[in-house]
Length: 320
Length: 191
Image (cartoon, rainbow over all chains, first blue to last red; front, side):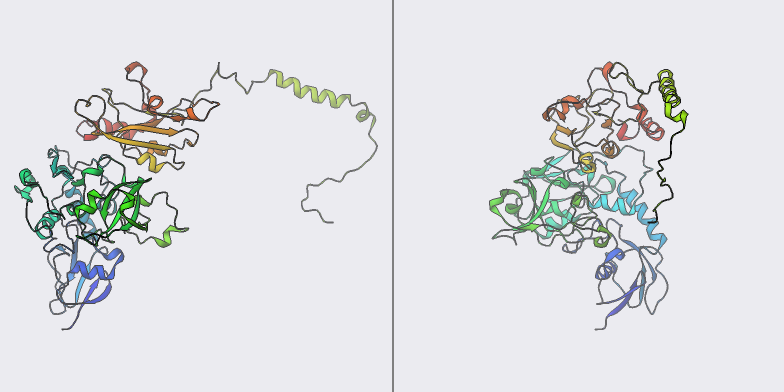
């Protein structure tokens, strides 16, 4: 099987047939990688919902050099041999992405000062990097009541961008589906049947996969802002999961426990609810050391690790 | 040795003339300068009976604003604290309970908000960072003191009084663009 040659933003790379444009771009890395809000490499079937990874295909393949008629979602479009893709080099894509951000924010309440996700929110990063600072939408936003999904998880449907990641987690990780999307279009909402609260050991991962503040940890609600807490890598012997987590500490207290996220904001391991919600004492964990957070993230504010931050900044926001 | 600058003067010990010897002209010349200062405008004022006019954007003691119906605007988002170069601001957030809607504007509020005035450098970055128009610097002066403890200002000192007559006017500190923005009642920020 021969490799396919793809050109993304003038950078050439050879990938296996069947690779998506997004994964090919991730192989290159850096600024070439399109942003993702719904695609999650660890969740089968995810992607294609948020449209923030749209790219322009200037040449479909070696044999058929015509450009694709519309911008395509890079997370769900497989590469072809000789494909030429334009991401940040195409003004059309840059413009489309601004529109996507505006579209995602139509019903978003912009309550970042209240939201616990602020500071590590993918939507904030996307807006900051690719969006406009103004909005044309003037109508009333759709509002929902807060819903408790179990004792430990809270759903703020107002903030949801309907990426379906949590639904895929419920489908694929927890096995038993008690959590899904009701209604259609702008009435769509993530919901659960309150009577069968999600009791699966891995249900807490829907908090970590949520790119916005729609699903948040109730035990951390309004405790602190993420940039006031110190992230520490830690592990413990857990019979259910890998037990490798990040502790978010303030002084001696562990305010919350999350999984470790890679440079694309995806979990390295899904962690169990016992690790996430029950083990809130330093003595429960073996602490490895402070977690490296990208210098561009607000979480590393006032951490003067580098003498020259520009040299250690890869230009992306968010958590590494 | 060659001098480094051309300004050095060669000292001579030549004999003084008669006029120089009696010193009187030099004394009169000096006294004239002194006397003209008696009648010139004084550069000092007798503070605190008199105060100098303040610029409307003077950066003095902070105020935590309430909105028109007396609810605290601060939602403890922590942006002022993260913007503060002196790390003078600390806060603890709490959730608004049912029945407290007339006290706090948002569902989260600052149950404790402290500014260490000894650390504060009055740069105004907190005011700049605030997304809720809650914190402003005012033209009030932080008074001197002998103890360190009272310089940690809590909500008691910072939140403006509920009485509409005693509210602290900060409208002069807001730019035209902000005042124009506030007129749009459709925006959730202004509700």
